Each structure stands twice: as structure tokens, then as C-alpha cells.
Figure 1 (cartoon, one colour):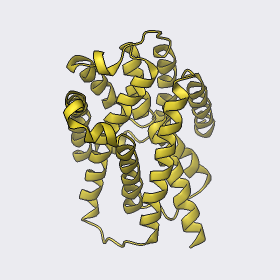
Figure 2 (cartoon, one colour):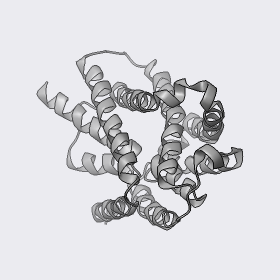
Figure 3 (cartoon, rainbow, N blue to C red):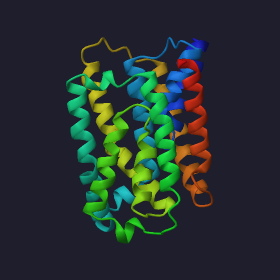
Figure 4 (spheres, helix red, strand yellow):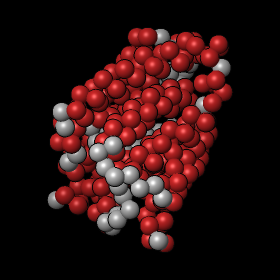
Length: 254
């Protein structure tokens, strides 16, 4: 029992932190799994972890989401920008092509390559804001980049922030639009997971509740920390961290 609780807390930390930072959740899961074999990890726990993150990001931006009258255009753009990922993700998932991408070599290289791309994009000193400069062309550009997050190691947060920075949005607004785009993305992932879950015998227990709550807490605190951090500092720390993770993965491979 105690071992199961610790495992779920570790998985919650990986999900909650890596989902919203410009680092790779896939790289971390492989790295941790190479050191320890989780017995508590299952489809139901995985869905619960994503659900916790979804609830956290929805709660964090509750004022933006509930104020439909003043944010109607922004919310419409977020939905529009999510269509490419949802459409492509469904095709890859339905044809099982998505599983062929889950290769440790692919993850190592994408973790490294997209860290460098993030570093280059973050050099922009322009200060566009999503309240005045985000339009259908720019959100489509970010949404198309988000498709790359289907490749393990890329990082959904990392690639969407990179795309927004390429378009010269400031760091805070780049991160905010990335987080808002995570709501449809997490909803889609949860839906596909629930679809598979119907083929399994579901056994709800305390671990499911723990996974949702702990993932919610880790996710909420991560988003709050990152938005405060990015107002003062660049992405360099995350770029360096990704490079180090990639080097560790290369060491495991070779």
C-alpha cells in the first residue's frame, strides 16, 4: 500500500511538472522507468493524472474561461488553434502510428534538438501581447507547431512556447497561450484514454483519487511558479536542463 502511494506521487510529480514546463515528460518517464519499474502505473492511473492536470489548468485560468463575454475572441482562437493537434492526434492514435514514435532514441534526439530551437527562439526581444496581436494566422502557426508534440521528447509546452516566441510574443503571453492550448489537448488525451478504458475492467480505488488530487496540486503549483519565473528570467535554465537530460538518455542508449 505504502509503495503504491509513493509510486503514484512520483508519477503525479512527473505529470504535473513536465506537462507545463518546456521539458519533455516522455524523457522523464523513460529515465525514471529505467531506474525503477512502476507497479501502480495503469491506463486508469494515467487518465487520472491527465485529469488532475486538466482540472488544475482549468481552475488556474477560471476567470478567463468564465468571462466569456470579454474573452470570447481569445477562447475562440484557442479552440481554432487546437484543431490541428486534435485531428492529427486522432489519426495517429486510430492507426496506432503514435506508438511507433515511442522510441528512446527518438526521445533523446528530440529532447536535444528542440531544446536548441527553444534557445534560439527565446532570443527574441519583441513584446507582442496575445490581447492585441493574437489572430487566426498566428494561432494556426502555433497550432501547427503543436502537432510536433505528438512526437515523444518534443514537449507540448516547449514547442508551443517556441512557436509563440518565433512570432515575437513576450515570454509571459507565449506561456499563457501555451497553457490555454493545453486544455483542449488534455481533454482530447483524456477522452481517448477513456475510450480505451471501456475495454478494461474498471476498479476505482484510493489510488485514483490520490492521482487526481496530487496531479492537480503539482500542476497548479508548476503553472503558478512558471508564470512568475518567466516574468524575470529567460528559458536558458530549461534549455540547459533538457540538454543534460538528453545526454543522460544518450548514455543509456549507447
